[in-house]
Length: 387
View (tube, rainbow, N blue to C red):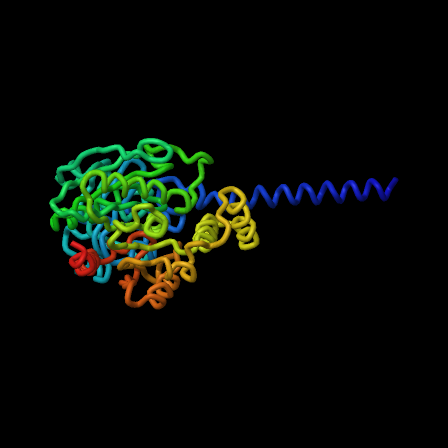
């Protein structure tokens, strides 16, 4: 009887431990599979506003606030745009101009370009984001545009269409932690070169159909919404399309270029911070959510069971033979979500087809923000032969 009871107790403990492991794995995998559109990724730290003055804002000193470039600053009900770190951060207090904030060992002063909406006050909690613009192309940029619906597999997909005179369209698709607003960073540049631009939402985005299981599949199913956007563009006059994708949007572009029934209309790919290994990205996001290292294999297995993401189909080893169009990759070694090394391997494997523009000191999905002029010049050179 004692043996039976001991065995039963051991089985109960084992079952409980197994159930706890499954639950823990599911929780850890949620960092990627349930990443809300438009909410900064957990790799981006929360910062505190310490003060504002004319044309400047003082923020918590962090590697993030010391990055070069221009970023959005998103808080609870507020949005602003900040430029470079100001020289005041390096000057003694006695030599500051009257309008300059006095820095400290714990703060950084950056140029405050504008406050889009809301306000910034000492104590506010904010995060840096790639989004410089909010709203729509007309309200944010003064660009004529149309709100259109793309017939998608799961239902209508809202999209912005900015008209242009060229027969090659650019379809811009966002990735993790972003919305189609991120495409507005480049809309002015593209519109000035007369490219029609289509920026669609896709399953899981605000206003778009929900994925049947409510999960993000990191591009593995979402690419079909990009395929629908290609079909829409061709029906409305596009002779060729260039797919411009950030993060998992870049993964979607790779999938569409390989699998779409209209892949012959895809003349080029522009990939910003591409997710080339969903397993690596899932582990990175789970770690950023403070998941213990022991849970990471469980998170991968949980994601496989929940989404069917078996195998790293987008890993560089399986991509080169499927790349048949010119490809420009913007990526850098400071990306904590999608490893730059995988992009470098991809470029090395197909040097005649793939160009890698390395951007340093830029977080995931924000390669443009670190140096907009250099980014746009590389993009101009790439697009010129495709016009």
